[in-house]
Image 1: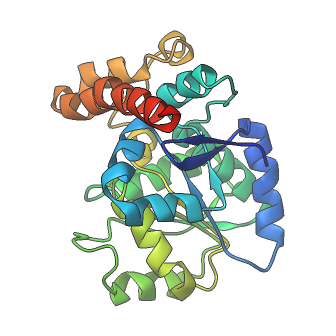
Image 2 (image 1 turned 30 degrees about the horizontal axis):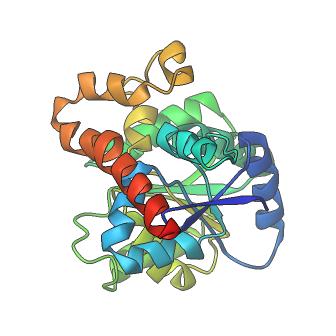
Image 3 (image 1 turned 45 degrees about the vertical axis):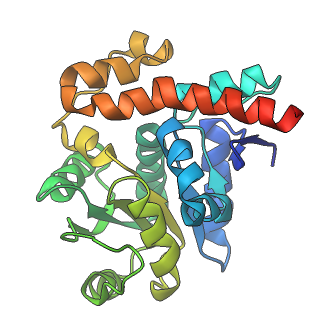
Length: 248
């Protein structure tokens, strides 16, 4: 698989359709698989958190979920295709409905996972939702959350979507996946449940195509300004610093 290293994290150059085809192979194999959806904020966080960087590089696929990654790859003379977590989850649920895989939605604010599940079932009538719960407060993603593990194992889903917020969700999957033997595919989905539940509207298609979804999101949720600064100011500065430190 073609990869581009950005701040020492390997990102796969795959289109949405190529990710979906790879997932079909994953689901047919005996192994468990893990997908991450890095964006600029996550790569900034990984510079201070070696454990998180290792988790991102451990994943089977890292998709470029953030226009900053596409620009950075181009600056390096390479290509990355953007695949958003929301679009990927939608495709996975469509595939799950077709193939009879059951899906478990874990995380999000209270009630968001179940609302997202209901709306997914309206779109994909054959979709089997094994469970949908917030999972409560996750303080330490490496701690043993036996109640969540028990809930998931009781329903034996094949696909696990985890929305504990970036960093936490990836570490949680990394440390718990082997305790969830039925799960063939786990993916950290960030704020995707909010979009699926309809609590936050997606940006108009034109803004998405222009890579300005972040700006629309900022207008919807002004409290995200720190995250936007991380993505639009700190991330490019780190990229420049990284490039020049490699040359000296």
